[in-house]
Amino acid sequence: MDFRGKTVIVTGAGKGIGREIVRMLVERGALVVALTRSAADVEALREESGCRAIQVDLADADATREAVIAALPADFLVNCAGTTELQPFLETTVEAFDRLVAVNTRAPMIVAQEYARSLIKEGRKGAIVNVSSVASFVGIPDHAAYCASKGGLDGLTRVMAKELAPHGIRANGVHPTVTLTPMAVKAWSDPEKAAGMMKRIPVGRFAEPADIAEVVLFLLSDQAAMVNGISMPVDGGYMIA
Ligand code: NDP
Image 1 (cartoon, rainbow, N blue to C red):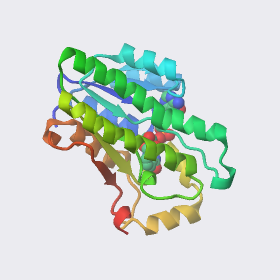
Image 2 (tube, rainbow, N blue to C red):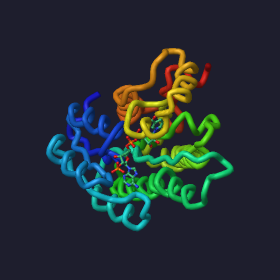
Image 3 (cartoon, rainbow, N blue to C red):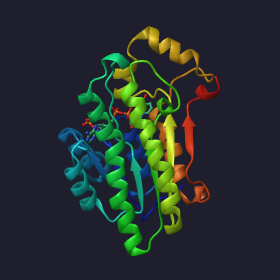
């Protein structure tokens, strides 16, 4: 997959899966515009990957819109930023629920709106990949707000796929299982829970960020020109187990 001459916006580019997507895109010739929160990651992305990096808190709707407008124009978009907080359903707070939906669901909508508006105005084609989770397909204990926020994101992906494809813009979802990143440390550091999850993954391991990044790049590329509106698990078979 050759991304020479292409500009790609990647949110959540500072760590984990987003950071690996940036690395792979840059290796394959893309110019990346990274949107992420920590100042240290912004600096590191500029220095290590030579990408444009914009610091933004995606929980802030106005700041998010401003940041994506500053990032445009772009050929492709990856909505990868995500966050989680572990709370049993009965103890899920309104504040945590709103925080997760703001970052995991509302921000991808805002970013994709501005990206698509810009392409449609210029009469250019493009592709969007929204990084969801297997948590949008199944109920995972202590992840009520997270599961809901990713389910909402899938709904947006499907509507984008229908409304934007006539303009030449495809939209697809990628659904990782547990992937070895800082988020996984937060969500799966309880060995008992992690072992239970691992048992349900027929390939017998958790994912590496590169496993997810390869699929994201494929869905962005012209090789996936007829793939639109799918929810693609990258889960070692978790969903069939
Ligand atoms: P990490 O926590 O390792 O990295 C997330 C990145 O998103 C960080 O750079 C973080 O920046 C950024 N981010 C989070 N919140 C905000 C915010 N409010 N504003 C701007 N940037 C923000 O997560 P992963 O790499 O593991 O996850 C990437 C995506 O994959 C997420 O959407 C996640 O839900 C999904 N996923 C992950 C799985 C896993 O097991 N790791 C499994 C299934 C799906 P900062 O650190 O500065 O806050």
